[in-house]
Image 1 (cartoon, rainbow, N blue to C red):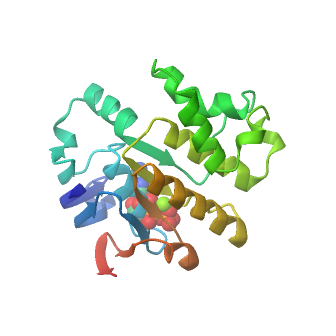
Image 2 (cartoon, rainbow, N blue to C red):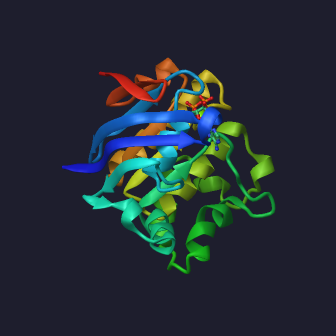
Image 3 (cartoon, rainbow, N blue to C red):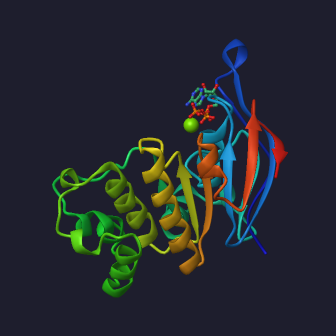
Length: 223
Ligand SMILES: Nc1ncnc2c1ncn2[C@@H]1O[C@H](COP(=O)(O)OP(=O)(O)OP(=O)(O)O)[C@@H](O)[C@H]1O
Ligand SMILES: [Mg+2]
């Protein structure tokens, strides 16, 4: 069953002479539980696509369907709720709050959303990601790889059905990148999540179920 689908998605930034055609008609289907990597040169439209998939920005034309529902038919308020409930974002920068310990960072979005915290589930995520003994630590007491694992735990804490990751290992060395990605894979399999991840790293891309190549706003190769 497909969880995520785009129909002729286009995005033009600016207009007239300054118009940038960032996406030129993307048709993409992602199956539930699938791990898809998106690769492509700088400026090819990867982040733009990811932002549309997560409802962070609206396309110029075309649709994004999540569970068969056109997300851009929602009002801004409904779209915000959709993002909080369905999508977990992981970015290249970890964006942890320095004065909060790891546990507090992980549950912060849930608290902001007024959700009940399932401590057992949080502990399971922390354990899978190898963070269980460090939950009292502050972010600056951690390595980059550990901080990114906290950012992943935070994304997973809200039990999203889709994880969207933009260069999640961009600041990590090759060994740490592979470790973090393996953990992301294990957790997403365990909790039945779908992953779409942008990466420049071929080795990391090879860990996905399939790779989609984007060039100049078009998908030009799938394998
Ligand atoms: N907010 C914006 N306003 C105007 N142009 C933009 C905006 N965001 C992106 N673009 C342009 O759209 C094109 C695609 O950008 P995008 O950020 O999606 O590329 P990318 O593939 O993620 O690149 P990178 O690998 O460098 O992150 C680029 O030409 C970029 O300059
Ligand atoms: Mg980008």
